[in-house]
Amino acid sequence: MTMKSVKAARSAAAVVVLAGFLAACASSSDGFVEEGTKDDTLEHNAIKAVMTGLGAVDPNEKPVDVKPRAPLVVPPHRELRNPVAPDSAVAANFPRNPEDIADEQRRQVGEGPGAGGRVMTPEELRRYAIPGAGHRAPADPNPGRALTPEEMAGHGKSMEEAIKRASNPSGRGTLVDPPDDYRKPSPNAPMVAPEEKSSWKPSWWPL
Image (cartoon, rainbow, N blue to C red; front, top):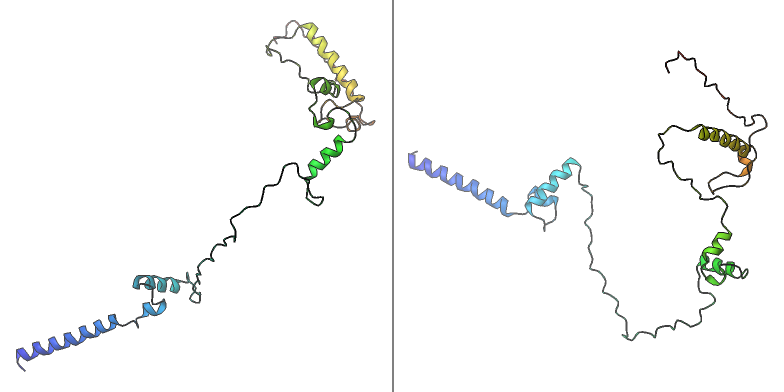
């Protein structure tokens, strides 16, 4: 066999192999296309095959059937009904707000303050005010100063008054105060004044 015949045989074999590759690429029977739909691209099918092998994609998943939305309903006529007059009678079975019904019932009880939906005056509000409720004593402008003997004696009186009020509570000053029955001390543990400690110190005491 001459050199030319060997080269011709090799060229013929290469042409046959190349033709087989081209035929395989042109056909749609490759593994990637079989995994997906025929409308998907080769890259999409390859990625889907890899994800299915990893378990991230369900191989039995059914495609989503997307349907077009139904057309909008157009009214048969363009004419609108006449607006309802504001002073027209309301049907008896028309639902009402329970709070409005309760307000009307409270106003119909009597002709006292607030009847008829009017706003109460400040004088009327003062009649129903709780004595001492909401009162705040002014703060001391100099809280770090030393107390005078008169002020210290006054603290002792206020402590005695607080013990008397705690023993016999009379009324609640604010809404957050507990009822009187809860504030009464137990008979087994009555309220007593704290022991007064002597403030005498010897002259040689440095403090």
